[in-house]
Structure formats: structure tokens, C-alpha cells
Length: 573
Image 1 (cartoon, rainbow, N blue to C red):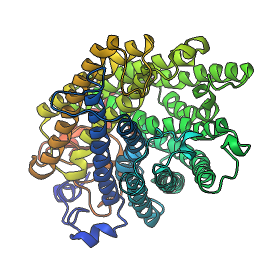
Image 2: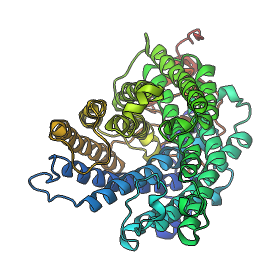
Image 3: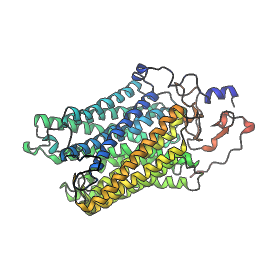
Image 4: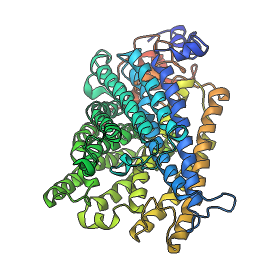
């Protein structure tokens, strides 16, 4: 037990937080504090999200009518402009938002605190990764200003990408630099988790969010160089005509697809694994129940990371690869679904008979389970050879991809932001408005993408600027849903921004979470902790008691023994 003065020092508002330690542009631009770098990432990826979302709304407005006339208040796009718009939407959304969003923003802020340390292993490399992200995103957007646009699709498929006179070199160089940013972040996380854990924090005392970031970092470090080399070869082919991918010079355009998807399918798990880690934290905290099957969820993250390297060929069932290889890739595709299913069933088992609090983070967690469940199940159709022949390059693929990537990563990101926002900024948000925004995101997302499954099953090809009139009603429903989704996302961020400046002051642990970051003040001290954090099981919620004087949950070790209820016997699964 510690006295009241010491408890106030630990859990009260510290004299110097990372927010007010030093102010001004230079103090942020040259900071090596992981929390400030995470906030800068958060601002950057949010801007990228809204930019890519704007491109998406322009696309959906154009597709409102089958002849490409668009909405009544919006002029139509030319076919060339349409191609550029969906290319930029995909490239910015994938490379500048989805891949770096959770590791770069939430991971940077939370990972060192969950480990009980004051920073990542390489703080300057961490700052460099953020500036590489800015440069890479700038190069992507430079394709619009200086390269005459970009119309290849975000996958940069050959042979068209080496024949077009649009800004392919700008965009691929931007993606190359973004790859370095991703590698720097992954390498930093690997070293930090391996060498800087709190004393006594073994692997099986790590929060599952750390397991997911660690598995993601393995993919970032091993797979991203393949993309970098591939993009450099594409630039060389475009400028020097070496004959790697160009059939006119003896190259093979399908070889580019093999190289690209050898990275990009593991990259799918760079996008979704951190989201799964966030959901594991939210489900456990807001059901106040020890996570069910901890070791299975932890090892499933590693299994997904490793199996993800072996399934790239399922993107190429129609490319002419051998029957034997397509059968092998199909079988591994079904296999990689098993670890994801393990996570979903364990989340549901954790919810069972839990003390569920339906606040904003929990609403996003439940939305994630629903949307990711649909995305995962529809992926099984695409893994079946005969069915994929019909569904390949249709809107069914578009819907499946968005249910997994956007319905998964975006809802997990928003849930994680609402969960850790009081810790980061020391202020609470309006939970009612947060839940309303979650409802709009959930409804808008389903209205947008569910009709696309029907369109794809009926044969509607993706990426077409004009289409058969029979599909118009589905496109119109999808367009209406896209605007609802856009308003929901905008509302979600407005609630958070308002809370950061005007929200009610938050206690150190308002949600009764047991992982180490909640043992710091809100916002955290400049060095994260003013004391040596007490190492508990990250899912042992009975190790916490409510302190009325501090208006927050604290560890039993800091509480007055006369006011502490007897400890319940822990229930192990």
C-alpha cells in the first residue's frame, strides 16, 4: 500500500506530460517521443483516409446512373478520369491509410506502455519512418500534379503499367518509399518486444495486441522488400525496357503478378492482424472477463503471419497457372481461414456470460466481428476454384475485400481510438454521440457493400465506368450507403476531436483495464510512468479496485486494504 499523496502522484495529472513538455512546431517535428510520433501518424493517416474517401464518393456519385451521368448535382467523369479516380482511391487507401494506420498510430503510442518501458528501441528510426510515410504519400499524390494522373489500378499490373504515359513512376516510387516506412516500424517493434519488456513480463503475460503487432512486424520485415524490389524492376522496365515484364522484350507480365501478390497477400494481414489485436483487448475489457483461449489467439496470430506467405496464388486462378498449383493454393487458402476462425470463436466465448458494457469501443468491436465474419466467409467462395472463375474480377471481390479490409481495419481503428483516447489526451468523449456515429458507420457500410455481393454474383464486372441498366438499383443503393458511411466516419472523428479539447477530465483507468498502460496517468507522463508499473496478468480484472478519491480503477497494491473487497478466485479457460 502507498499513501494518498503517492497515489495522487502516480494516477493524478502529472506536472509534465508529453503534450506540454515542450511546445511549438520544432518540438513536434524533431521529437523522438513515441507518443508524439504516434499522434502525428494519427493525423496523417486520418487525412489520407478522408482523401481516399473523397475519391470513393466521387466514384460512387459517377456510378449512380448506368450511363455514367452521375448524380443530378454532380457532373459525370470521363472514362479516363474514372480510371484515375479509382486508382488513386485504392492506392492512397491501401498504402497510405490501411497498412500504417493501426501500427503507426495506435501501435506507436501503446506498445511501449504495454511493455512498461519509456520508448521504442530505436526512437530516431521511428521518427524517420513517419517522414518516409510523408514523402511516400507525397510521391503518390505527385502522380496527379506532375505525372498526368494514374490509371493502372492500385496493383500496377503489367503490361499496361509499362505502356501508359500517366504517372506510374511517381506512384510506384511513392509505394517503394512507403515500404521502407513499414519496414522501419516493423523492425522497431520486433526489437522493442524482444529486448525491452518489463522485468518478469514473459511472452504469455503480453497483451494480445502486442502479439498481433509482433506477428505483423514479421510480415513487414520479410515481405515488404519483395514489393520494393518488384516496384524498382517495374520502374526499370518502364524506362530501360530490360525485358522482365514486357513481352515485347521477352518478359512475362504474369511474373509481376506473382511478385506483387507474394507481398500483397501477406500485406492483407499487415492490415488486419493489428485490428484483430485491438478487438481482443476491447472484447475482454468491455466484457470484464479473462480472454478465452489466450494461447490459441496468440499462436493464431503467428500462424496467420506464416501461412499468409503461401497463398498468393489464389489471386491468380484465372492467370493460366498449372492445375496442380491452383489446387495447392486453394487448399492453403482454406487452411489460413482456420486461425482467423479461432479468434472469432474465442471472442464470442469471451462474450458469453460476460459483464458486457455497450459503450462506443464495444459497439465497434461487435461491428468488427459481424463485418469481418462476412468478409471471411465470402473469402471461402473465392478460394473455391470453380466458383472463383465466375466471381473473379466482379463486384463480389470488391465487396469481399472491403468487408475484410475496411469493415475490419477501420472499425477496429475507431474502436481502438475510442478505447485509448482518454489515456492519450486525458479527456473523455461523449459516448452517446460516439455510439450514434458507430451506428451510422455500421449501417452505411452494409448498405454500401452488401448489394455489391449480389451484383458480382450476377456478373457485374468491377472497375467499369458504365454498366448494364439492370445493375443501376444496386449501384444507387450502394451510393446512398457510401454517403451515410462518410457522414458516420466524419462524425466519429469530430466526437474525438471535440473531446481532445473540451471533454471531461479522465481518470488514469476509467474502463477498468488491466494492461500496463493504464497504470500511468492520463495523459501519460513524458517518460510514460512516474513509478515502476506493477506486473499483473493483462486480463486479470479482479486485480483492480475502484478508488473513490481518485475516481479511477487502480491496482490492489495501491489501495487501502480496509477498503478493498476480497479477491475472487480467478477462472481459467
